[in-house]
Image: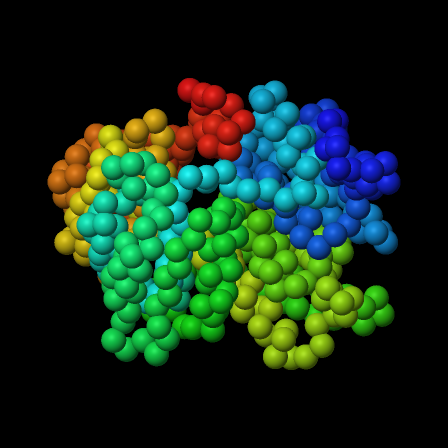
Length: 441
């Protein structure tokens, strides 16, 4: 290791002692790759470790977390999205180096961009109006993520100037843009004002979205659209003899579930001392032994209820409700405004969206329902595809209830009509976005 000249020998020793030890093993378990991390304990380090794995879209099938004094050990059983062990050396090397540096923090790599944070009341057509405003101000959307939950929307959008390709630094332009976006986000019957923030800071997008929705207190609100049939079950009890609060979560398993729960506990200033995570079929069972950062357990019934509400919200925010549509087209100014306007004109409500730009191509995912949160009529989906372009907008996955209706019209691809990305392209794309490799093709 090359040491900065400003470090003395004692500081170098401290760094060596605190550097996590990472072991990746494909021999122990027949069905998963084991990632073991031993490290000095500090608040937030578990979240950083989980973030390394979930940023690569890897599935954590099992995990064991144990803390002994000032030291902790994490063991993760991980697979790719197809359920296979990790064999790509570039992926393994990235995990080893990233895990080994988690004590020093990580960034999401979005440099040279302006970040827009938006929260407000969700409604049909809202994204269309937001992207229309950005197009009017000559902003090119490079990356964006949009979550909705309990009638609220949170979005983190990374933009640059269309002409110069640089971050937007004109303060007058920023003020005008903020004012327009705030008006779009406001709702007449909403007692809380919409929030818009413009920043040059680099942050982890999904963690920031959780923080934005937590600050907006989405967990206190009742669902406006049709609630999910599979709500997470969360219980919290105190183990008085050991001074722990024991949190149990049972829900449908999905990608990044562990990250969402650990992120929420960390931002609520709880420390996870021990945990067991297990999955069976499509179900996930998670148990956490937690305390406040000051070492005390949960001490009141209102606090217990708040933890339950916040963890339920953390699981539900990323729930994939509706039809999964993927847009792949040449990037151009106003593309998102045009596509989302077509959604609005056909009564489609976007419940979640992920926007990205790769090699001058827009690769965007949208989850859509009808205005009431129900499944969309397949004929409406086909009409939208015809208008946007059959080759540009594809149905990646349908809700289970829609599969039978579509079987006679479309031949299914893969399992249950779902078209899944291969591990190679998915993981390599994430490594490319993180700057680890030059090409993911």
